[in-house]
Each structure stands twice: as C-alpha cells, then as structure tokens.
Image (tube, rainbow, N blue to C red):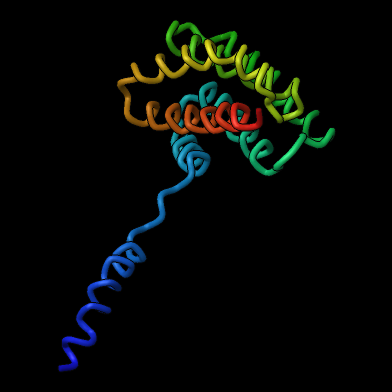
Length: 162
C-alpha cells in the first residue's frame, strides 16, 4: 500500500535529484579564463589576458561603465591593439581585428551597446563567428567560442533594448 502512495512522488522527485547531481556548466568568461591560463606563447597570453580583463570589467556592471573603469578598458584595448598589430597569421589577425573593433565600439558607448551601434557591428561579428568556426585547434577554438558567446550576449542585449 505504501508503494502506491509514494511511488508517484518518488518518480517525480528522481529527475530533480538527477539534475542536482550534474555539475554546473562554467560561464563563457570562466571557460575563457581557465583556457587562457594554459597559453604558452607570451604575446598570445598578453592578448587573452587583456581580453579577459576587459570582459571582467564589462560584465561586472549592469549599466554604463564608470569613468575609472572606462579608462582602464581603454588602456587594455590599446595594449591589445598594439599586440594584434604584430600578428602575422592572417586568420588569427582577422579574429583579433574584429575583436578589437567590437571592443572599440563598446568602450565608445561606455559599455552599453545601443541598437544602431550593434547594427554597425553585425558584419564585424559575423566575420568573427565565421572565422571562429574554422579554428581546428581545440583549446584555441574553446577560447574563441567563449569570446564569441560573450559578444553574442552583448549583441542580443542591444537588440532587446529596442
């Protein structure tokens, strides 16, 4: 008799228990941070560390970026831009050029991308996405996919605002 009473409740509870046992999926930023720590090449590590720091500042604020943070973001972007200028591999340079342009516009808009600015960045973002899809090396692909996902959320937020 107790089986008839508790079996339906048990069957309903099992899926919830199974979900609770699954590890949480890391955020794109956490994935990027963990991945960037393993980069051996100093110049590449410098680019990614600047990119991670930019995302950390951007994601920490729900609205416009504070002036002190905006100055830090501009400094990080300049560091990244100078580093990117030294890249010789065409596909890598194209990805980073797109990333730098996206950051430039986002910083110009104080970390809050409005719909018109997002529209001008759409082709840049499309180029980045297409380029990322071609990456063969797993660790590099993981970093760039996390970066792409973060930009996708910025673009979607801009579209939803209007």
